[in-house]
Length: 411
Image (cartoon, rainbow, N blue to C red; front, top):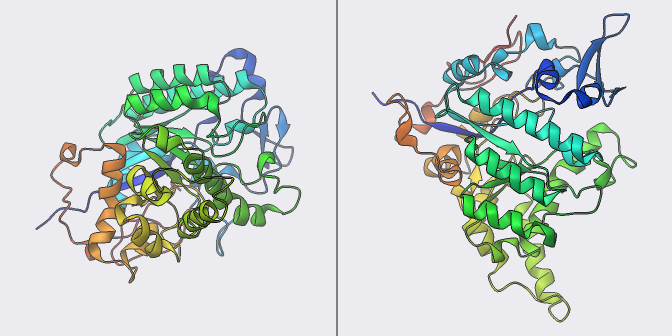
């Protein structure tokens, strides 16, 4: 009897405890940190910079897969209804066993979007506090729990220092924002050359991760409401990131660099690279193309991750290679694939089992440098893909997939 397929969650999340900020931030920043309070009627209010955020649902709903889908609620309670795997490493490993996840690479929740914060000192203190906390979190099981260091880039000298600190502390990757800073800096800005060079030398990959779809830098907040911001802003961020990296010559100058583009869908990539190739050809007299074709650059140095239900996923896998498309749960976020990200990919008819192996674990193992041989014998790369079970269910619902182990928020 074979073991379980060693699925790697290329992009899972934690939820940073509110008391962590007061424990790890310098005192001068405590009043600006994320806080959860109750109003006179007992309703949850989330504060940032000392002001109410106006979030139209609770952070418990934010941390409930499918929380805003039909049958969900606006008022899931973080303490009573959300699985403690969001902030307890021992429970997270136990939950991964239940979900069928061999390794999770963990990203933040409340520390996304730091590049929108105009106060650079606060931004840096916030990133460092989170990086220290998540490093401690993953020490519980450094084989199965991996972490992304948050590195804002507005101050390249600070970014170099934090990169070195994170690498020494055991980071698996660094998370970068695709959104231009308030000062107009992008991933292709010349002042980042030293950072890209240091990252290349470190051997760590970078993950350009979508953050706030309503970021002022994107200009969408003035035009669309919340749902439409998610429709436009999430994928648009990653399109910007791909454009800055490929068109900005980052990979040409750093041929050993590895960069991923996460949580902004995948189906647009074929069009985006094709459009870039077309503009190089049509505007060659004023904007000559790179020496190495951009498609080749992506195939050799990049990966992408997004919705397993994306209608364009198989086309993207055919274009760049199935090992360049990585599976991710986005657990526990409400906008992750629903009703079940494992079942959705397992049951796709436009991918064969070998392509699914690439997407479930081979591509992530290569991108992140994860040695599957470090896992115990219960995980088997030769295990049958059709036998993989489901991952999720919401409070009061049935698990997705036959015989699926349920990840049930604590009652």
